[in-house]
Length: 129
Image 1: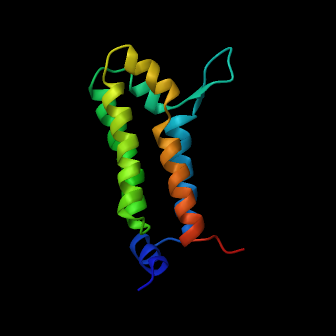
Image 2: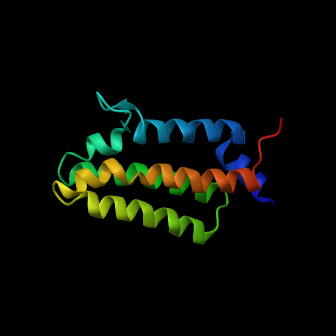
């Protein structure tokens, strides 16, 4: 069984639909809102992260969803570990009051993970024209 077959069978969707869903999740988590007066964009990861501890746990779980999708797409354990490390760093430092909130505005773990996952999908699950 190839990785593509397992991927399509598990999700019940075409790779294009999975990409669109994951890119939408990345947008909501990292880029949904524009900071007034700047070109900087933030998402639910930064906004919900303002709630002490619980917000960081919630956004960490949302970030783990990308790792779960990478696993379903047949990503290597090394890639999954890199993605989990990004989520772990974001969650751990994000839980520190004030410093973590500033860190959340700069360190976009979900965008980093989506870049890694997109590279994997481009290589092993290319979109056919």
